[in-house]
Length: 314
Image (cartoon, rainbow, N blue to C red; front, top):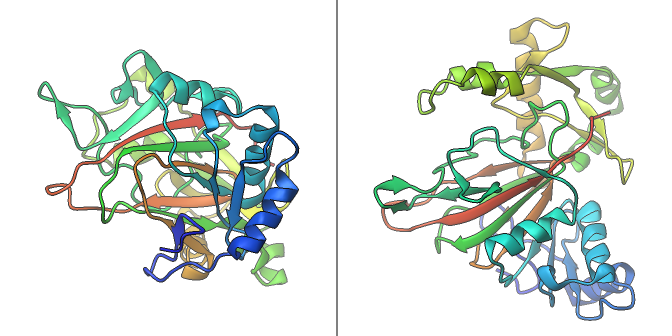
């Protein structure tokens, strides 16, 4: 693992980084007066960056603005060695915008429902968190009318091997498409159905009527424009994707699956190797991500997850 970044290629080879000089240039650009301790080390292709030198919970306005700018610029950022209590985590992530709660509440933190627990740990005979959650390429809560803008994961207990989080850059994937393919995809809308997807999951209890009322089917543009950067990206995924509006379901699903296979090729990916104290923030508007498995008989894992509300895709 290179010292300048928290990311590596998913094959295990070291990721190419911009090096110390590039990191210092990025910090100088993004960190105004008052953020002198902030260090931002982006990957060479502009996808993903590691941030060091600060405790985000204590960040002043200038430092926080620099982190937010890095988030919008690099899509995935890792802040190393963060030390936060659950209330501090909630209050810190709330600075990015209004918080979203998960549709399923049984694994939210008591007293702080905005924190969703990922864990393979039992306490008093009860599993304290969801285990093997998020396996498969997706963007969080894409089945909502206004999908979440940001997801934050905070590592409390991290296995020394396995359990990487993989990310894929949907902006680079879109920009690499042939022009005729871009024109063919322009205007298509994906039909997302959380209820249909959950009905196929034998590991989950049936949705209640209240949960169904909160998750009607929605349709989103297959090509989405980022509201801050104005760059276009693919807005695709698996799981809740039912098909493409106005297209035969099997044909539409096959098209989306083909795009996911293309957009998650190694050239568009990065992998996060977890350490305890990592706070990873990613932009659901222009990335896909997936969890990976680990030896859950040998290792424990405990992660806190939070989400920030987004806007209507366009």
